[in-house]
Each structure stands twice: as C-alpha cells, then as structure tokens.
Image 1 (cartoon, rainbow, N blue to C red):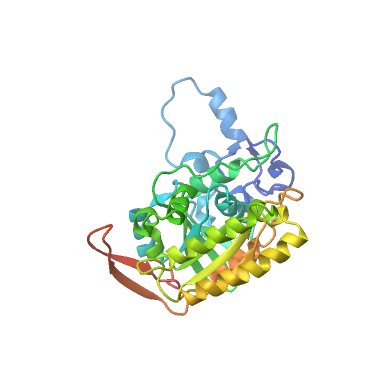
Image 2 (tube, rainbow, N blue to C red):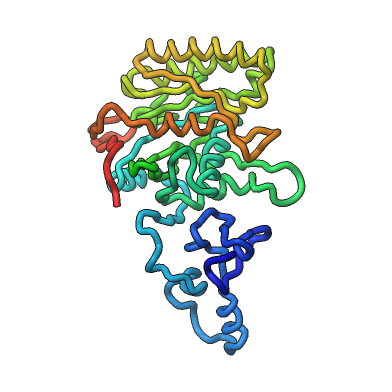
Length: 348
C-alpha cells in the first residue's frame, strides 16, 4: 500500500494509490509532479475564488510531501538539452565524460538515449542508479512517444535541434562511484554531411572534445543484402573522418554499435560481426581504442526488454585511463577554452 496516505496520481495507470510504486520510478513518489493531495483538493474547493497566488514550494509543497527527507544525492533537474557552452558549466561543476553518438538519420540514436533513460525510471539498471540531470525535460520528451499511450505503434521523436546539443545524465554505481555523462543529441544530417565530405569541425565540432565516440549502424540496413555493404562503407568513411587530425583525440575509445539488432537475422548478424571486426581494427589503426557492441534498445517483439543496452552503458561508464583537463585552440571558436575531461571528479 501507499506509504504516503492522502496522495493520488493524475496519470492513468499509475499504481501509486494501490501499492505506493510511482510510475516515474521515484521513491514514495517524492518529487513527482503528477501527485496531488486529496486534502489540498478539499481546501481548494472550500476556498473562495481568487484567493491569491500559489505558495512557494510548488507541487511538492501542495502535495504535503516532507522535502526534508529527500535524498540530497539526487537532483531533479528540469531543463531541455543544453548547448556546448552550457555543457562547459555542467562539466566545471560535476566533471564530465563527453560521449559523441554519431549515426545517420534513423540509425537509432534517439531511441538509444530514450530507452537508457527509461531503465532508470524503473529503478537501478546494470548496477547503476540515476543521480541527477539538468535535462529531464529533454529526456522525457524523447521517451514520451515510446510510452504506448493512444492508438497506433509507439514512436520516438527524432532529434530536431539545428545545433550541437548535449544531454546531461549523472549516475551512481552500487559501489558508490559517480559518473557525469554529457551525451550528444544531434541530428543525423550532420553525420551524413561529414560522410559526404563536409569538414568535420564545421559539422561535428564536438568530436575534438569527445572522450568516447559511438558510431551507430542501422540494423535495418544490415538486414537487407542490398543496403548492408553501403551502410558499412559509410561507417568506415565516418570513422576515418572522426579520427583525422583535429577530430577525436588519439587513444580515445570508439565503439562500432549495431542498433536495431532485432531486425537482423542470424545470417546477417554473422556477416556484420566480421565486418564490425574490420571496422574496429580500422579504428585502432587510426589511433582509437576500438570495440563493438550489438544493441536492440527497443525490440519490436519485446519493446520493454532492451538487448545490449547494459553493454552500451558498461562501455560508456568504463573508467578512463586518467583524468585530465585539456586546453585547445580551435579555428571554429577562435579562442582558448578548457575542455573538461574530469571523468572521476567527485561531486555533491
């Protein structure tokens, strides 16, 4: 039963009133904007109209939740995705592992981020727990299409921003290690233009700042013998561009990631495994630390049982060889900036 009597949730299908489990995954519903107090409803009905503005404290105060007991290690941020400049401020406070997720249109970049976020709505995932974000609105917007509300198949909205943007996600491991991630949130059009020959610094200026780079390959293209070779060739061109001078620094991890693995049959997977090994070797020849990961973030036959998402997360949060701060001068910015690479920086 609910451990907070007198509260109801406005969301359809939320089991909070029955067993105290919050649909958003928040302990006892603390901080959930969808909870309201029955007593507050009764007071509002009895009060005369126009009786003043809402009191400080917002929905948590109106719901009668005691905020003094909230876990201080969890911050419920509420902003949209952030610019690179705003990412600098977040990194200065928390440290950051900058993850560039590079894939063409419809390769599965947004779904990967949305489903990773979805796992933490349910609680700890792969020995990690949610520990804060300044971008919850961005994360929830990217996932809301996958909730399966309404007629028709769920659909995750593609990234629409016309500039380089980042999503901040902070995690806490079961052993107490904290990781601050800045995950790229960029349109596939930028990646396509790099593959087609556009200068990397103009289209993907985040590459020079990336601590980890994920090259996503669309499993739907690998599933067809008519499109698979082109998909792998374009991935190789992308890896080459990313690892050119002025791109991803030498020694940084680069993962070749198959998205939508569930779309590919066993023959196609065998073919791709051999090709992915060659792409990994090519990345290593170019100075990167290569690996391969197969994922099905939202498989058609089991949309809430992702495959390989734990492997992707393990690669993202793996400890870096060392923490460092680099000062780079770029033609794009025309001035010096500190690009934070404080992977293990503790934060409050």
